[in-house]
Image (tube, rainbow, N blue to C red; front, side, top):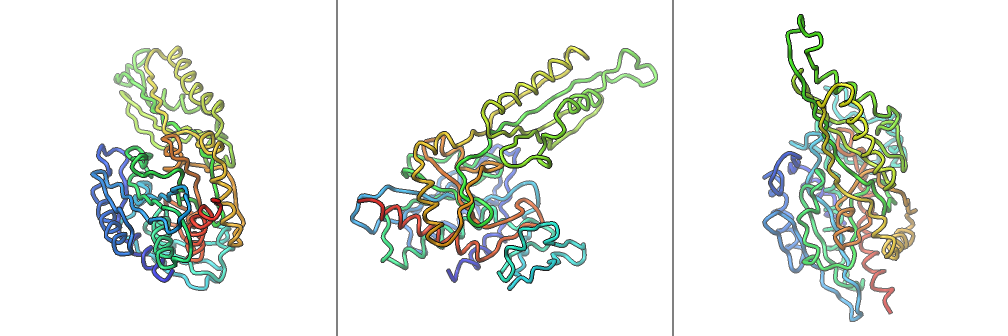
Length: 409
């Protein structure tokens, strides 16, 4: 455990931001910097079968130390950080014995992490918090998960009295842009099931996630001198705006929670001749998810009748709700739940309002629930993680390995 904090600080100060429009894997060359460092560290702590492929997917093995025939299980995290906010020159701050008051992240820019706004902070009074300096994200998503997995493997190596089967671990690039599992070799990984260490607060245990798709609306226009434009100009910006008014205003991220789905417009650009809207579609329910995609097409058809054939629409599915793949092997959730309870951690079983590598891996033949890594406020300058939460995640990993072996007769 003594290396957990130093590991994490080392990882987050290495910039690994991914890039959604890149065609390479990994999407940014700088992801290799941490990937190569992780490979060296896995060798150093005594892991076996350490490998990194041409796309920077890392795998390693902790061999079984029991004579029982135990299922091979795995743990997965990603080393890229979100393109939504800068991950360059991360300067983590350590707040020991947090007093429950405002944390000034950046005095110069008056950036404050306050429990008045981020109420979860109140749960960590007296603990050690790792925060940003207010100018970057932290990268606990998901470098906390990586630090926890490596520390747990080291802990098991140092404590051979804890009996476990074969454990496989993997670290992936490009999860933040939805491609973390695209080139994951499930057959090579060779586990019956796995867990992503990619959740948030202590106790989170998730086996449901959004069905997800992305959409692009393109509007073609006709530019004519505005003084002579009557019945001639087609303003693509105006049509794009009309399209957006047909989306339900309450079904957006800032007004939804739990299993409520949404449309999220995240990019608009336009001129008279051409306007583009990019959005994502999310819903846990497959029927509602399809209805959302149908609505986008219905709006397109309606407005094309109104204005002429000026609007085109493309929709691309991204991932599905992994629940249908996890429920048939629900004992893998129950093992994680038992591990938490044995450590006096109250399991929080709820749907993920997002996706992880595990959602795609589950449909690739590797059922993969998601477990907390401890961080909060991902993808922005208010991101933080309590050290004690990371320590608990390490113990949960080790306990899952132990329970999986002990339950085999």
